[in-house]
Image (tube, rainbow, N blue to C red):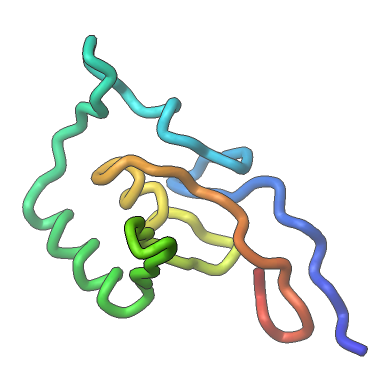
Length: 102
């Protein structure tokens, strides 16, 4: 039997503790409700490389596509950067077990 990690309720990013889940409502929006953030080209280059290594494209119901990126529990900077660039949310996906971190 393997040791299960406690459920994650928050994460740290850029020196701040953030409670999970973090949804796109926390991002700045314009009057039409669109997320309005400026993302620099070098930031997009970084995110493209990160997604290439740790990202996943999933399809379901033959009509929907979900892009996801995972990161271990103790650091969330990349996830916050993805959310700032593209919107979406940050959620706990799995509980850790044994040597596998959540």
